[in-house]
Image (cartoon, rainbow, N blue to C red):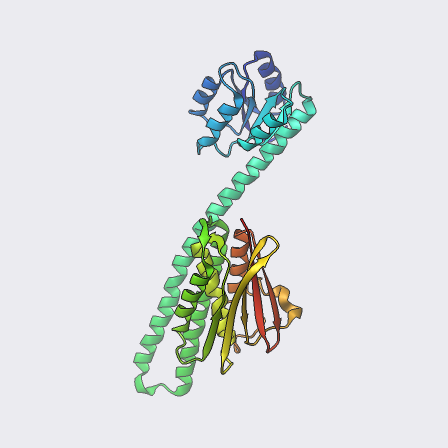
Length: 357
């Protein structure tokens, strides 16, 4: 017996419905039937099945047109549709997939093949539904965690301030150092949690793609970051960069992480140099970000884009270990990728590959 599922058969041939229904009921499925497009839509307005078996040739309508109507309804969009057809035209088969059909079975069908395809697509649909539910629960959990964890950290800071006031002039340097350490570690932990939540949410963001000028974004982002360290000597060289198709918010987030890293890891340089350049490479628009900072050992380069994997100690450079992992995920959402090259104490170079469209 298969897992329970409800299946709607749409076919204008009663004998076909009877035969299919008998096979499906023997497998443990609950079967419904409609002999026309009109009766099928009427049924679907009242009940959503787990699968629709749809004949391409119906008396009152074309099965392809009916599928188009079904897929336009958000409530029915994720219901798998398997076409039943005697058609052998590649154009018809191609159109059935383009309209949202997940598979097709040729008439007269073979029992074993027919049931195997139904089982397979029911399993896929159930897995997709479970994944969607789990994803929604994860989003709710992330939102709750983000909200609930802010309060304890705020309380820690408030208690430290109260303790300082209570001690007044009686607090020694050692006590003051300990309290500063508590505040610092609490702040670091809160930032790390926020960054991790930001990273997890990146899976669900649907990019709003449009043509962007990355040079404009880079210059504006660097200007904002530069204001945070007004006393440093940082030279920023930005050449011509190719236009890219991207989501403006995600690209800004990526630039902030990459340029923020470059500024951070050049902090030990008396004269820091950060350079951006661009070009084309086969089917990709390429953007490079190079700095003369601390660099890294290429032996460990595979760790760069993993969450919480850092190549420098907290004492050397502060950080959450999430930034580059977030950048890699943003590039993946844009259909591209990122590479890194570095030498210890000789700087680093990151290369972004955006697909040309």
